[in-house]
Length: 155
Length: 82
Image 1 (tube, rainbow over the protein chains, first blue to last red):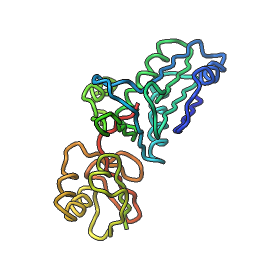
Image 2 (cartoon, chains in turn green, blue):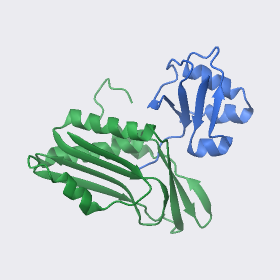
Image 3 (cartoon, each protein chain N blue to C red):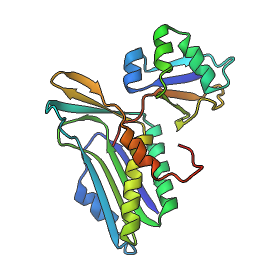
């Protein structure tokens, strides 16, 4: 399987990533997910900063892709995560999976996002009109990742 | 020596991104935590939080993970990417 992992400050182009994923003629399905900087309930977000752990980030993402590959038959996987300063509605993360059939592509994309959110060393800090705040981890993200664990498998 | 790295809110609250610690007498992550906690009540408080995660040589690790001189050990809050 071909996997492409990018951690970058610059934006990414959805179509370019999609075209790359559809190159493999054995793949009949491409599923892509894009995460964006969302406005807060209070409506006062002015920006976001994404910190990461250089070195470990890439290793953690590669490990998550390997785990996906071990669970489903995949043709290609792309994971792109931006770091640094982002603005409202900016693209943060891209996950794209190409597979022979749609079920594997859908499930692998969801698995990769669930594991990325709980295992890859990224931290979001929101800038608002009242100050800067580190985002708290959410229990529902832990629960989403836990769905994929088989009995006896560690966190 | 052990290299210790801190990230995100933990780095800010302790005003420290990186430091080195003498590895003598430290054989596990839990012992390194104790040595760091002895630096000040603030370190003690921050590192005793249940949700603090640890990575040894850039792999997530549990408190009983063995350490040896030259290891890079990171402590950080729960991750919030994606």
